[in-house]
Image 1 (cartoon, one colour):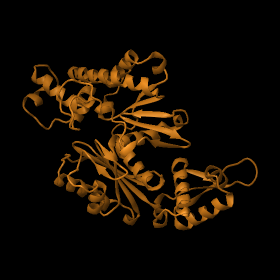
Image 2 (image 1 turned 90 degrees about the horizontal axis):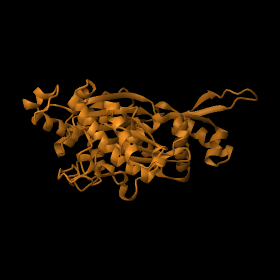
Image 3 (image 1 turned 60 degrees about the horizontal axis):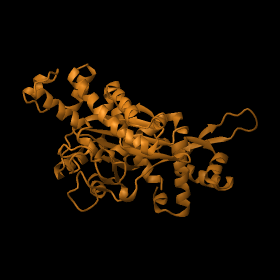
Image 4 (image 1 turned 30 degrees about the vertical axis):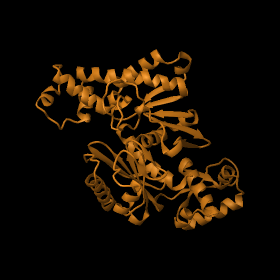
Length: 396
């Protein structure tokens, strides 16, 4: 791996081979040579070297009806591992993925209250270290840890501008020192987008643009790339200033879309409605000042047909659909995927979104756009973190 990280000409070719197999699982040497635009003897030389190094292995013979069956090659599963960390407001999700892209371990809902302080960062690093210590793998083969950070992030330089930003050094560098393994960071929505992308399966051959929550991906050849734009920022749809409500957003501005369209907004609205006299199965807890009420419990109440919760979720869906319609008019995407915790309410959020999109977008445009719920739901972030962790090592 040291040779690959040095960036020599041979190393760049090996990166291209690994990247190809990341997206294509297996192929023959002739097929790989066509994809890389290199001669068969050259590709054969690299494949044999990488087999000796342990990164590539034979997957057996390809089935064929005539002639000598060619050998299929692909990545060796235990030649490296990647860890993904998805930070939620009250919990952590941590996953361990092997070199091929299969999950070895996945811990969901680890209790952790996000606190933007040095102590909060130390706790986070402690949970990650504990996860590593309990992993039943060769620890020296952990190649990268990808951490999802909400808000503004520069993945290229490793800076977070919203969370754990109390030092001038890059957050990725600080976490690398604390944990003892290479750490990269990325925006949590981008990670969810990337995780969801792999679930589209065969539809990847059809769809050329994705919108998932607030992230944008496009297809280039056989790979998918995120539009980071200058300084690593893009896709901050949630921070469009659209409401004159004077509610302070976590980004520091007022009136952002997220102040009315988010899980935090649902929590705030429910508490306010109950205090104003409206009824919910959660009323008793709220009126007794129970501060431990979580968003997951509100989502559960919605799915148990709590009328107030359903009303508030539908209101959020209408607002999201209205402003999503503007993006559909602008970008004309083929697929829009609704993710995040609110997606767990199913049709309660999806139908109002679709209704508002039909009402506020151009008819010719919205007919092109399929709007669907995330398949991964709460696992999208941690899966995406693992995949981005691997991607950052090999894709330029």
